Image (tube, rainbow, N blue to C red):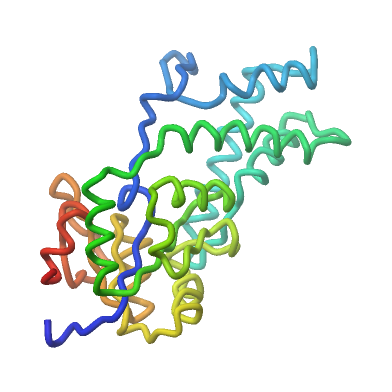
Length: 252
């Protein structure tokens, strides 16, 4: 460890500290197959608000188109974040359902959607215990690509270890997404650290490994199901199968 004397461990949120269970979402028949979605929870609100103007199929087609637009925007070299509220608002606009209360309606839809996402998101006990052990020696922080700041912070609080983190950065609050270098710089500035002071831990090769290495940090990659790193992604300093393995990996 002599060549890796970091002072802080900064982690990703989803599929690193917490997991979510899409199988717990409502079932929707869409394009000839069953999908798990929060959409069935949104339909009653839209029907009550819009009456005969609301068409489920048109709404779902618009939502899928907007989601694809956002996915492509996030693939840019310097990806910006589009919030869940903006996604709902863009969907209403695309379906011609925008009206004087569109912002309020989009926020209601956001709240319902995010409420259920929060309900099906949990932190496994083994990861919580690992973070407690890590925080006994290192300063800790968190950066998440998540499109709703309020819910992102709630999910971290739900883990019961929110107080361990010196800073929690949610992309929806910054307008930037990993691997944008400025979102990594933000936590360096807030924690008053140099890049080489930080070990960053995450599961996504582009967002977490590439982003942290470009920022000059050490990197630990959570490798699932024997995945290989895509071409162009620098080698991480550590490879683990789960966050729970990190304490032993770094000598705790």
